Image 1 (spheres, one colour):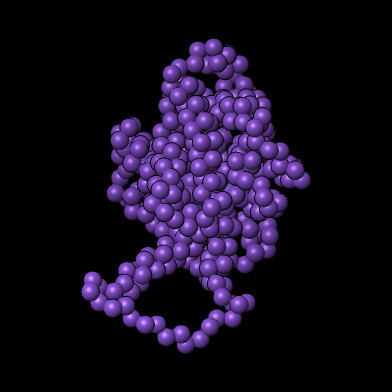
Image 2 (image 1 turned 120 degrees about the vertical axis):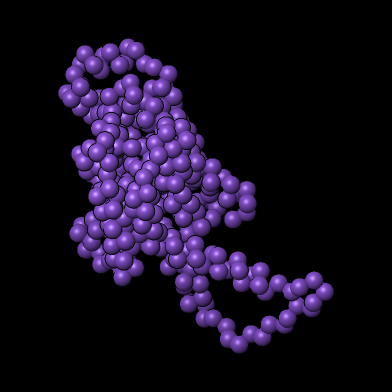
Length: 344
């Protein structure tokens, strides 16, 4: 990837990390499920006219919408509404990578690799550190609901594996959003009451408008246009590791904008959780190999005034085995590609 493409990937990371702060802006004045309904209404209504219909996979994509859109965001917004710190939620949600491996093992009979088991144990250790260090002001129920959001995301990831090739994350985001607005509005009417919903709809605040416009227009649509363009030009193994930077950006944005300062145990637990995700998904190995290639490439350059060394070719790789390591690495990074794309 050239520097300009790396900057674009970092831009998307910032857009997705700041997304959590804008969710908090909306939750100050609107009920959580109503805000989710408004967000996906804005995602669907303009975009569905321009995004191609996903032929042959609509039923599965709508099922993805139940878990990855309605389930994940309905529960995430509710956890924030119950008092979970914004920065902490951006970290806890990443345990979905470990949950995805577990759900795939139970539903698809996939046997986790040793690396995945180690990554899951590291991630769960970090999650335990966070759970045991929750401050008195943070309700345990909010923590549990956020875990449920991560589990819903994981179930959606497993369902997304059956989507036909060629369907982009933008198509999945827009068309899966069809199942979100009406159920979320109905649940909001049931839980919050018609009077509260009517009051909120008739008196939208600037915070609510900013939340809906940013989360739907900027994070979901603009973010995916850039992200999908990068995935179309480069291997997923080069692009996907950038998503590990979303939680640090979310924590930093919540700290700077909302004064949501994490505690030391939360930072330690969050670091372990993100490390576990990196190990589970293979992103850590991908990053390490990339750094190794850069170091070797620089180390192999001749010094100024020095003649380059001649290389002796000892053996040539068989065409069937050449690049096998890169392909397996790409497969590991791409296995959760659709799921990770849709869930921002």
